[in-house]
Amino acid sequence: AGRGAARAMQSALFLALQHDGGRMERGGRPRSSEAEEAEKGRMKRTIIKDWKTRLSYFLQNSSNSTKMKSKKVGKHRTYFRPSPEEAQLWSEAFDELLANKYGLAAFRAFLKSEFCEENIEFWLACEDFKKTKSPQKLTSKAKKIYNDFIEKEAPKEINIDFQTKNMIAQNIQEATHTCFSAAQKRVYSLMENNSYPRFLESEFYQELCKKRPITRAAQGT
Image 1 (cartoon, one colour):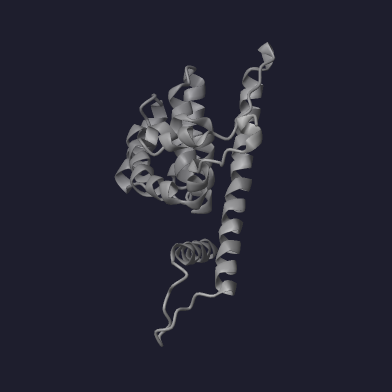
Image 2 (image 1 turned 180 degrees about the horizontal axis):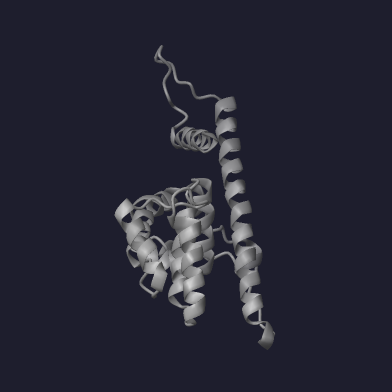
């Protein structure tokens, strides 16, 4: 119930941001006012700040993960804000967004704001699962993915049909790299057709695509 209320609040907030200041009251008079515009601006800044906090968290985790993997050679990587041109590439194809570390983190932050981050987390778990070489690890990872995302009342249960769930339950007994292929395709399609277009329309993404004004210092004058 709390999650539904949060969704409703997010939707109401989104609608409030999308409307112009020139909405009309029943009597035909414009409702626009300085106070109303200030409130809209405050809500907009709050939403973007919230997304930036989530984005920072996902980027930090990605950076830490890379540091751990490359510790032996003493390498680490920090992810910087993309240029507007790089960000605009994400709108050309969903794969362009997922292939970019910063873009992926931004998309995860956006899904978290929509309370459906389990979709991207499942997709990432499947990507990691397909790269697993050890048969023992393959089996243990398959069971963990099933427990986390597939079984009824799983903590991050994804929205897939009962038949696909049953098929996965049977396949993980002798796990192969294709155990979750059908479910992963379903979730990918769901994100591509629903969440991805909304992400491209979001204030957060639009801000990334904005070109910053050139200052005199940048011009070297």
